[in-house]
Length: 281
Ligand SMILES: [Zn+2]
Image (tube, helix red, strand yellow):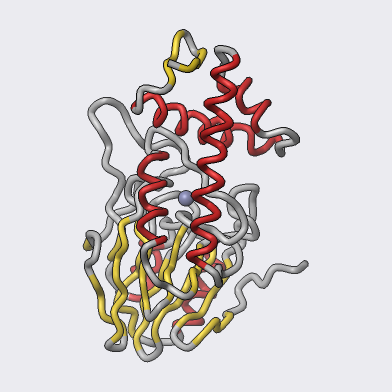
């Protein structure tokens, strides 16, 4: 299959998609940037700072007023194009917060865009108007602590919180499994008809899909609890048992997700750690 790079795909009235050329084991065919609105536009997840992607976005904007450049979170495949696009269009960057760095140690790793500097941060429930329609921020921490989804006319731009092709990586210290599950539950109680994720196809059965994702994580948690009840185990040992046949490029990410589960279980008093080995408490 040839991925449609730099080709504007009108998904429904008011929602068009442009795929950036940054395919990888974590981004699928690449990051999907959304153009939202008609006479005016908001740009959701401008993506990586690739000149050909910025050119394609600018062509698609085609001189219309951009009211906001909105990032769901600040991983390097989502936000670095925000500033150059702001320079090209004069639009403000409005959306997720920059990553909060803690005194206990940096939460940011190499995948974070440290240069992200929004003009305005949206908190949960805050709205922007585009062509007299609202785009509403829905705080969904978990994949990252600063993750937002954006609701618009029955659609939800779901960023990396819910993706159409793969489960989401939840990598501590910034990724948090309990927060991620709460954020899934928050979406489960909403009534959007379609999700447009940053990676992968649109999700047209969102409530069912979110229930499936929650069930998948609960199964994974049970499996990890069972493994550490049999034996004290290291994370690589748990990954080898819980993810047979895993693509070697995804082993580190799987280890992160296992750690996220273990930290959550530890907070709940169900597991404990000694010298890198985890066992049931
Ligand atoms: Zn991400």
